[in-house]
Length: 382
Image (cartoon, rainbow, N blue to C red):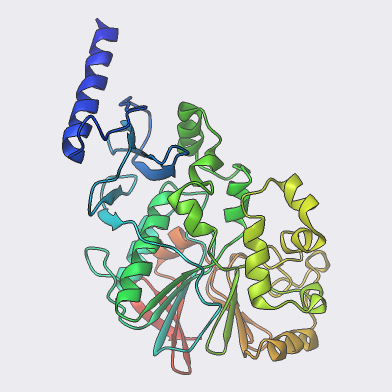
């Protein structure tokens, strides 16, 4: 009886999916539509483009049901329904074309900076709503201003794809009104894409096991989020500020690299294994190594093992790239912190802890003012 019930559930799910999509049997390429209860929270969706031209969409609803559907053709005006892992925040995401952002932008009236969301969508929403970046329906309301997120959406939390989709959605909404949203690669993006899943929460291991694929495949180059990640920059300049996830080392300066070169070279190896990255080029080994821009801590740590940067070398870096400051994430501090007489700013904090305690969680740059912000707006001058 149990097997018959499961078969009936699968049949009903397939039928409802077919009807709701508006697709006829002649245009619907059915490969797998499955509903199966998991010890799981809401997840996804994951959009995978298959070799036969069809699109596979995988998601888990708040009831822990896995939905795996293949469309031969996506319906007109198709959008994804995204729900946080608790089922408390839901929003629609239309798919849009992706391309590499510019590496250099003029300074707008305001730049809002945060880093290292690490799967905590509640912290992202609270901070952005509390500072009038998005409205109550999670729509862009920051006009022609710039939102900068300095890497590390992957790992540690339970809303990883949901944050990616929110940033992806806001990127398009901002562009429509002359604004901009930037997400830079952190160290956890290439870690996951190389299937280094040590810091992924158990739900993601469980989902990958259920699907019979490596977790990294859900963000591969044949997926919508993978295509988007493949075009993200590693270093970007806005006005007189240079943004990078971890930092720039003495060896980085000695290599005399242009920012577009760094961005392109990082993308070349993004979906490679560690072994493949090592065999690609010496430059790749450096960029993905401890002295590279997504790992180097020597701008904010002074212990010998971090190879701290001499102040005169920092000045040479600033001069080369024609900026006044470097703004980073990666290394966590109790509050937004400054180094080298405010020439380096680190905005990475424990987002959940600081949200709870009402401490600083980001940076607002308004004309020449640099202000620490929390979930209820500006707290103090930097």
